[in-house]
Image (cartoon, rainbow, N blue to C red; front, top):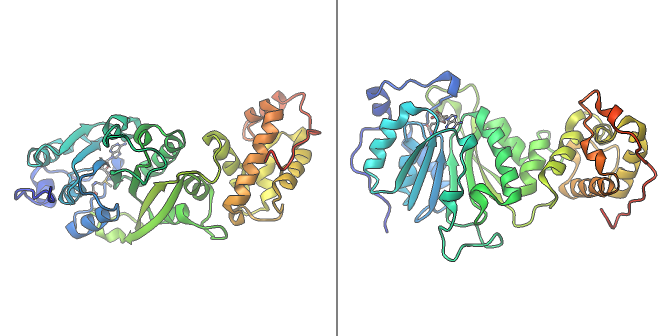
Length: 341
Ligand code: SAM
């Protein structure tokens, strides 16, 4: 099947004027109305011919048009702002049955049905990524928490990842895009870098100047592609990896020893911290942003080995002032070997 040729439609800009659709500040709406940039963003997703696509935050449908033009077999759009229904329905009516419009909050939207059994036989996790994509130009405030939620879904192979390694191509505030892709030693390296890179290959595809959007945001925008890894660097449960990453970066400018200490209650902090760093073979004077994925993996595995012996340590929360009081009967003389890490 060749790419879909949409019958002549008013431009998205004309539709916005026709329906008097002003960008809503509270939904951080910044539209990308230049068809060439829409097409460039959609092409960054890869080959869409015959693919299943979920577009998040379609707004008036400008990116949706580009996705349909690229020959996607089926496109489901999830939009929170009901004002866009008429423009999206107009697009649906000329799409030849390719477009489904859902009005709702993508943060509460389960994509399992969209992506389940689209290939027969169903692909496995180890196969190359399926012909399934998530694409979107979401508000920055939604894109980051949503990405964290989706990383957890990827780790559990649920939601859009029930049938394989569905890729995501999304826009972020440029600084966030740079953080997601930042390698060890990079000044932008942070918790988000570790989380994204643990479960996905991260590619900062290109940057769109803020002035290309209507209305223009104050910052430039990075287009990022995430491809789930067959095997994560740290194949441990999401909450544990998230906790070690969060604690590690809780004192960003200090030696990593300072932040990692927040994993442990006061009474056993120094002893368990020494053990953690020794068994994980991590130099205590490294800064958090210098830690490689291998070192991070050893830290997580060693912390897991400590929890295996003292499970209630998992509940310790440095930020909770009462947490130290609930941590009785802890033994800092536990033995952990590098083999268990
Ligand atoms: N895709 C259009 C474009 O590129 O011009 C619109 C982009 S605009 C930055 C973000 C869109 O996401 C808006 O249409 C907004 O209403 C929608 N949106 C915001 N929060 C959302 C949510 N939680 N769920 C679904 N859509 C959301």
